[in-house]
Length: 319
Image (cartoon, rainbow, N blue to C red; front, side):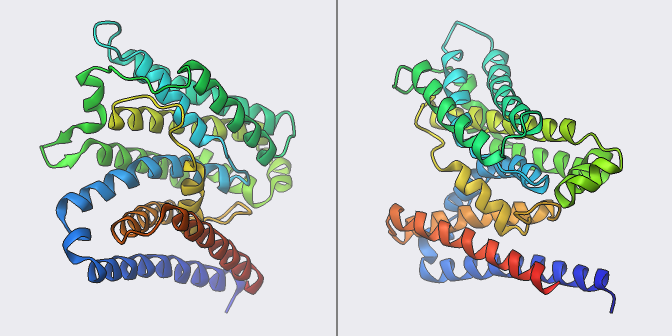
């Protein structure tokens, strides 16, 4: 059997393993808490939780496939939420203003990250660690350290509404974002170049790919989606909280890694990230229902990331 066929089989087995692991977790939680976990209202709540993290994870997926990482997305969520809520007071601005501002703020932070990584040749971890702290500080300054309340009903309905009185708006947003970015990743030249850069940056440069522009675009996209996630979160909690979004970068990275995207870049499937986001939401919700302390939940999520990365490393060594 050729090395290429072996690699495809190993990748397919890994993807199936993620899917079956997700089903097993669902079954266990339904057995342990059938009356609470399996309630329709709770399942809808899980989908809402997965949607915001899923949008973040989709942007993070692009960054990680390109060989980078973005630790600033949680802080972007906070800042964009504060900005959106600040311009969503009744009688002041049209609804489009907070929506556009949240997206622009996120994209600008992502652009700054991309410039530092692509043109400053600063390691992504350092650039985004710095921006994580800076952006969180700006969010606290902009909100004067307090949540921003008093938003319009129209703003509240951005996340709080339903399509056909059945499907939450948040789920619709997640589906649309996922489908669009999945198409871009798998069916466009840009998507192939993202994979190429993550797989071998030197070879990508030799083949004529403008590596700097692709990296800039990837980080800007990630920031843009974090801005959208911040808008949706502010609408959902009916306020812009400068302390919101803490550890969201952990959940986004966990969803991507659990979904089978390689931390070293160049490999991974978009639907794996979707399963990873759902799995994170299900685990968090299930642990809450089982009254597991939030402190232990952080430990569990950290262990999941370590195990997923270890499996990725072992898988590459085997290939």
